[in-house]
Image (tube, rainbow, N blue to C red; front, top):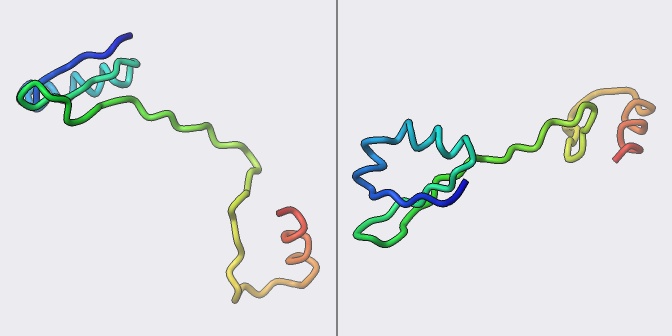
Length: 76
């Protein structure tokens, strides 16, 4: 799949079809007066990893037994 250039007017008229093409892997460049102004590409969302709690923090006012908090903090 390559790069396709479309004008702003064409992009407005065919937006749903262009999104479908981007989802399929095409790179869509939107132009105004022949100059590139925007790009429409598919998002790459990494799959969720079961059990991955990296970046998760407990609230300071959470009341749990100290041993539970210690276990949680040891896994960071």
